[in-house]
Image 1 (cartoon, rainbow, N blue to C red):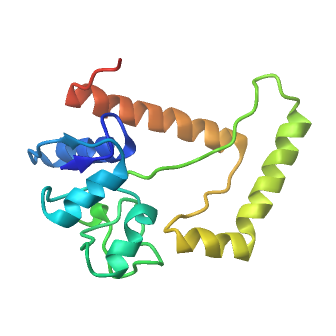
Image 2: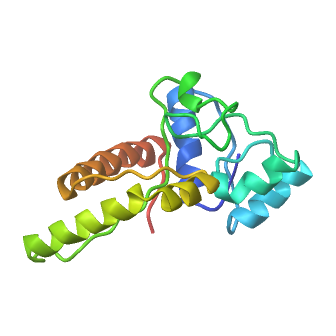
Length: 168
């Protein structure tokens, strides 16, 4: 199982798979996704958990066979590729990005930023571009995002602990 390096999203996605299935995969960390993809293409490794954006050109060229996507819903970009959760119930590993502000930022500023960001994410051009990258916009409130951060921190903390990974 190749990854973009120790502790990267691709590594943790693989560790979550191992934890949920009991499948014993040997982790091979690389210094980034490009060399991991190179060895996947060359047959030196058999599997790589990576983002759609980094592998899409190889999928479209028929050089990489996608086995599953990691979000809980199929991607419009790859509608015939099942989700991993279809085979491993409860599996979900998505990379996500969010915007934070200092703790004491006035509520009216936070609310305005939230409204503007949600409006941008609702824009059809933005949604189209995200779909081209295999991404999905998740608009919501600051409280929603706070809950998401707590849930993700708990989930990935369990993965790190179960896999016996060490922080440096």
